Length: 392
Image (cartoon, rainbow, N blue to C red; front, top):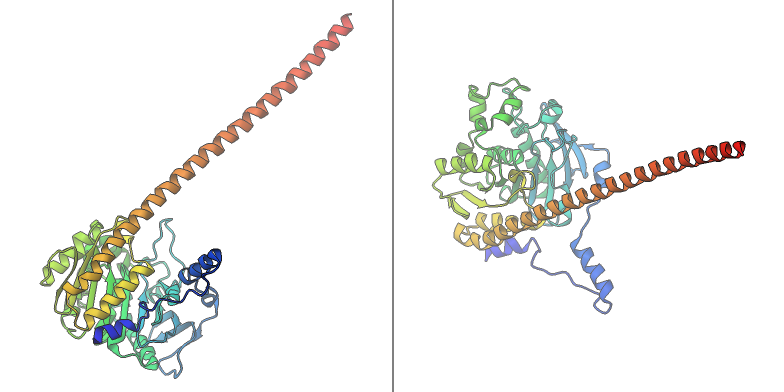
């Protein structure tokens, strides 16, 4: 029953009351308000306050911490249950080739949907190296920013009264890599990582651009290899739980991460969840709009994932956790299929609109040419008449 009591804290199973059922239109609006919860964007615009490891009060929504040489830009929202979810940022690359603005806070708005406390920490590497695309919260050969980040997380969890085994370190792509790395310094923590770069030296594009900033030869540096020995981190922290989620439709993740897990852990490549002690591998499938690697979770999927990681941390087996994972996998696949279809539909609409616009522009051009010809014809005809009358 303990696991059910923990999951009940999330309050997902308590349906909110629909007060108005007499007027259908008002009922629809009320239900939409319950579903479409909007976060207050103004909280991100606030000037960040300073929070230190000596602070005795929880920080405001926007704050920063300077720990050793790491500058940590953060967003925080206190919840009403004893869980703290920490969201880590991934790569700053964007489809248009530009870098995401700094700071950016992954999933900050989800506080509207979750009653746990939310802490978003942007990668301090982007402050130290403003042109860097991905930093993995690494630091340099002398200082480990992951350790500095862990100090901040533990300070806030202490002020909240949240035990280590209720700290969820959560990230996607490079943020997932950081989540595993930071767990090395928080004993008993829960880690959820989606499509993380795990075997870093095999991600040559990211690895090579990373290396040029802290000037690290990642292929020979023993410090880099030790700090990024993720199988070693997982194995030497049996009190931690690691839920590593991978999209098998993403070639880069399937060929690197899944191969790494099969090599280092006693798990099988199964559609769903398999486990080896404190390590849980979850394979899902979703085609991407631009890249399957980026077929990450939504709020709805996050809620299921949150339930699953709480369940397995309370002793639920991988087989039983698959009851939820199977539903999540089906929704994950269908969700992105729908998004792809909508994207293709929008492209077709945009194409048709352009064709109509071009046709309208061509029609305007033709009308202008006809008007010019008519004016020329009128002028010539008048001249002809004048000449005709003169001869007469």
